[in-house]
Length: 471
Image 1 (tube, rainbow, N blue to C red):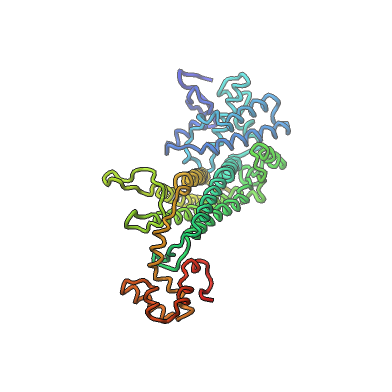
Image 2 (image 1 turned 45 degrees about the horizontal axis):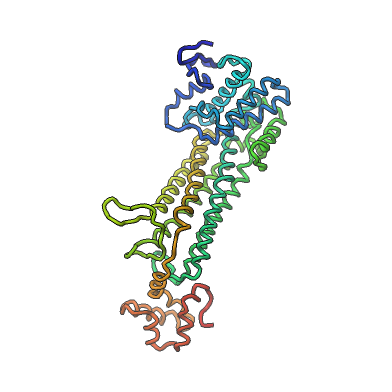
């Protein structure tokens, strides 16, 4: 092993490479660093953590099967645990836009764990003795089954432990507002035009249900994501891995991660040739982004003003809105939400392309898919919490403004149709609009209903409850 002042010489099957002397990674990782100077982003930390967990589990199983002796097992397990715990993340420099199988990152993990294990055993870092990155750390494994397994675990954990609680918190906040605003009657709107009355609470109940269904879609996608490719090795056949090894490693992973749903894939050719489970999860994230955009845009409209907009709600004022217009306050949180949603939808487009572009026995867009899915999960998680904390919980209703607008709402004429017919109702509505008079006044003047009948038919609160008025 040759050492310079700042570098050491490492070797792989293609020859020698100069590696930073302080680095635990080796020649293959250094090649990847030089081959892919693409972005400023590496493999997500969540995937590095999962790679460490897989290597810990594999070391335990390989030890039981006699592949690793006691010393190698102890050292590899400790080094892999340090990777899983984030202690060695600085030694994972490979860009996310790398080989599409994630081989560079799997070898990055193998080399880091091997060199750290060598160090723990008192050997020379980079010597590949007594621990070899392929023969010992990667025994019975392939990048083609390990890396997508790590991505599945990372995405499952992020979705189940972070996004789902965030969604439920947002749902609860919206549902609380639905209860709070249950008696605030306001105009309904379709096509951005006046429609029959609703309550503000009913609108918020719709928002809460959208978020609830978003969580249900994520939960459903997790069922497929829990199937792991581990055990398929290179092409799905399981060559060079004992038949029972995958299930044994996955059992270890269930214990390590606490994710009881993890299981070996039903069909390893599907599990390695396609990334449909991740595409499905990304699609569920996209639906949530669509829902959040709808909700945010509604809130932006409802809170528009303060004097010339709809103004049926007031959004929390959290920062000045203009560098030139004094006193202006803008709906900045909902604007943040809609921008995040746009990014998630864009991420999903890339994931879709990645998912459909695999060929034969391996999808080779896995790093891209991992990056985008995990970013979408993080963005949605943080956005849901921020939406609750800085917007939703502070929303107040302007009941007086809502009442003012609903009294002007000509669509309430719809409730008269069962009593006086469509044509007469339309004629009276047009007259009220042309003369800029209240509908009730015009209908009373037409003498088509008694005062009591008119009161029953134009009971605005009852209109929000459905049914035929006047019965």
